[in-house]
Length: 63
Image (tube, rainbow, N blue to C red):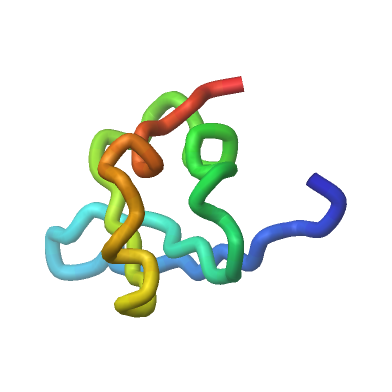
């Protein structure tokens, strides 16, 4: 991966657990590497055009 993916720190106050939001395009195939081993939940916000992709495209592949 040649360029850094912007990460926004979210939460961490009033009893919430902080997390990072990754922002960018064409990240779906790189999620396993980007989120690391400790992630337990992932949310993907996407345009309607991606809704037709097969469910297997969302499987995380760790490198």
